Amino acid sequence: MSTAEISVWRSSQAVKHNLRVAVISGDRTISSHLVTWLQGRGHQPLEFVADENVLGALYFDPPDAVIIDLEDAGSDMQQLIAELKADSYFSMLPLIGLFGNALPEDVDWEDYPLDDFLVRPLGHKEILNRVDLSVQRIRRVLDNNPLTKLPGNTSIQNAIESRLGNDAAVCYIDINNFKPYNDTYGFSRGDEVIRMVARIMANAVREAGHGGFSGHVGGDDFVFIVKLDAAETVSQKIIDHFGVVATDLFGEEEKAKGYYVANDRLGNQQHIPLLGLAIAIVPLNTPKMTHSGKVAEVAAEMKKFAKKSGKSCFVVDRRKS
Amino acid sequence: MADRKAEIRSIIKDTKSLPTLPGIITKLSALAENNKASVNEMARVVSSDQVLSAKVLRLVNSPFYGFSGRVSTISNALILLGVNVVKSLAMSSSIFEMMEKNFLGLWEHSLGCGVAANIIANRLGLPDIEEISTAALLHDIGKVIIKIKLSDDYSELLSLIKEKDICMLDAERELLGSDHAEIGELLARSWFLPEKLIEPIAFHHDVMRSSTQFAKTSVVHVADVLVKCSGFGFSGDDYVPRIQPEAWKKLDLKEALVEEIVAELEDRLVDCRNFSLEIQSGSEA
Image (cartoon, rainbow over all chains, first blue to last red; front, side, top):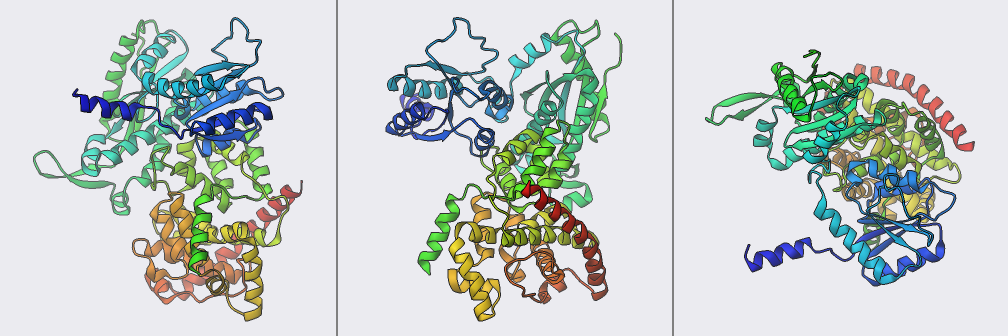
């Protein structure tokens, strides 16, 4: 990298000012201090009290960082944090918790999925630097896929390893006919398809209840984990929902015909079928599943079956060995 | 007049949200209590309300999610956003403190248009029926802006209509130098809604100006006329415009077919009336 390149890279990485920072607190004094400080720094503070409206407001107009007052009695902040972080799109939103001066020695951070914290009394220099740092850090350490914000391979492998032997299923999604779609309609349209599949999968997994996991291997490959008895229902739901949403991806003519015309590598005209999903379901409760490599191996075999028909479908590995 | 236009533009730019009827929110909270509430059930309630539908479409088409200008139906929006996000969004909606007659009338008119457009698109065998119904539901969103953000002008409009015996559209043009179709278009653009929804909103009073969505715009226009004719809801005046010949021709309408459509619409409006009563009683609670 040349010096010029490095400085360009730095400026694109630098935390910009005028961040939109949400301040959630029931304490008027604290909240007005924070607002004044943030404004002084050139940020744009957004004040909220923790009521049933706050989550919707954050979803509707997502900020760049959130400072959340955990001393706010009478509202369930923990629930709010968990709810927010459960949506993959908000996993990269820095959450800074504000504790009272009696911070316990061993906060259970599993219960508080925060990115940083502050303890009263508050100093304005510290607060402003924490906000900037947490925005910077979350951009740096994200294992998540930049396109879909879903966890990447390290997290996927950990999620599988930790569930080996359980009554759970690892399900691999692959988009049928994705490459020709990308080639014909362009990268940005292809990226939209990827983001759609990610949202559809993550929503279906989340709506299926606790203990689920959604990840993005890369390209048009996705993984989700749900309880074994829910695997087929969730897979079918993902396929159905993708079928509905795919109507926004093609023109009227293509939808009516069920294919579109594109040139293959040799320049010949080809009828390319519309997009679909192939899902391979691999149960984890059999003795042969000893490590995540084995799971991937079985999934690769299953995927071949699932892709054979060319239509959206799922297949389940029912072989005992 | 140029000042008014600039004022309207800046109002629209600052419009992040609009209030809705409390009864709709009551109904959605009831669904939200039920953890098993499906996308379809939620979609049915959301798509009865023009304001909530517009908000959901604004969110899913916002640059944050990366589908800008792509998502045109409530079902697709719900699938992509997820039930949780839509629940929270609905719960955070501001609501009218009081049920106001004119707003209820406009709400009913929009609901009726969505239903009428659905019947027409169905009978004509057109593709993308849900998208057409959504466009019809949203076609008068500009009137919501006028009513909420320019409320003094709205009262003045109503007196102007009575005084001069003119229609809403003419009164708007006289008073604001703009009209609800144009205002709706501006809002739809600033909320990143797809072109497929923008044209029917912008040109439902002048179908010839539609360039890429002529058929959809025509359906919305016809639906608007038929619902005004039915007497269900109140869109601002009691004036029933004629169906524009270009729309009639584009959709290849026949008198017999229109009669069938009107008969089916009358049936379906009975359900709409009941639904409206339910929403009104939910609002009083």
